[in-house]
Amino acid sequence: MNVFWRFVKKIYFKVLWEIGVTEDTERSAEKLRNLGFKIGKDVFLDHVEVEEIYPEFLEIENNVTIAYGTRILLHDSSMNNLFGDPVRFGKVVIKEGAYIGSRCIIMPGVTIGKKSIVGAGSLVTKDVKDETIVMGTPAKEYMKVSEYRERFLANIGKDKYYYWNIDPFMERLKDKDWYEKEKKSYKNFIKKNKLDN
Image (cartoon, rainbow, N blue to C red; front, side, top):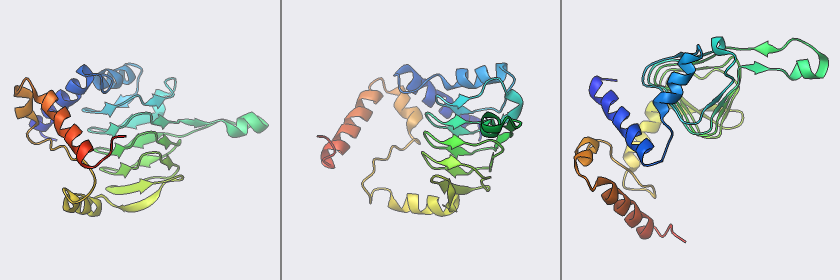
């Protein structure tokens, strides 16, 4: 990620923090770093739950996004609780550029590949290949990220979803009324698509 886009991302999440949409994500990553976790640069953590007493079992590389409410497990004590057997620990590695959707559970010993996507609500029990989308409980391979992106771009403006183009984001920040304009655009979309009750 070049310096410009890193700057845009930082301002974007700072604005979200200021208007109360998300927590201060840099503070979350810094907190884990201070506890001994290996956390890369430009990592977005939105209310991610981690077992803070086992920092040696988690590594998050650069430019990773982990959405709201995801839980990363670093140990399994089921056999210990049932039979007194040893507690099993497993290192979780989340590689560069990966995206993990909201409310996922990542099990111990899993590696999530570069630029891969984990769909919201997934239970990840096995390694995820680079540039692959997985989803479900348990998570299974869905398609390659490149294939999904082609579909995504082809459907812009042809489907029922609202799209916010981030390209002119810096220009919008110069406009003191940009937030009100964005809210108006969103409300028009809701009204047009009869999504309000």
